[in-house]
Length: 155
Image 1 (spheres, rainbow, N blue to C red):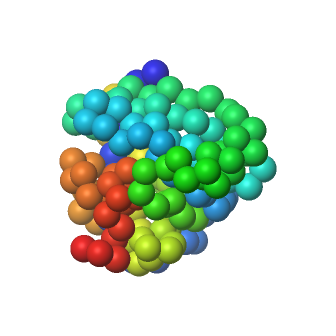
Image 2 (tube, rainbow, N blue to C red):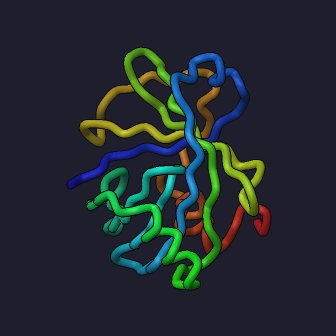
């Protein structure tokens, strides 16, 4: 399945007044390669394994399936992950009929706040609220797989 996503830095906290939901996320990478990445993610009582293809602009292939939380816990406990877990709190923020996902990072990525927006087409129009800063879609440093190996606090 093709994922079309744009990613931005967040410049202030004014987005918080439009939050419709939030959840804690911990994800870790089983493999980080040039052509693909394999990650496991848990959000309390749910977990997934995801395979992502190489990004081509704002698009990339993504395949995901739900797995038992024990599976993710076991993989992490066995030390099979590449890099450190990425911990974040994801906030769904409603803006003019669109849902931005604002990720507030914790742990070694503390201080980083990113907004993501999934779109139907690479050139789709979308609102640009004042809290949305510089676009970093093409900057690999802001990809979660990169943050697992080179956390924000080491930049």
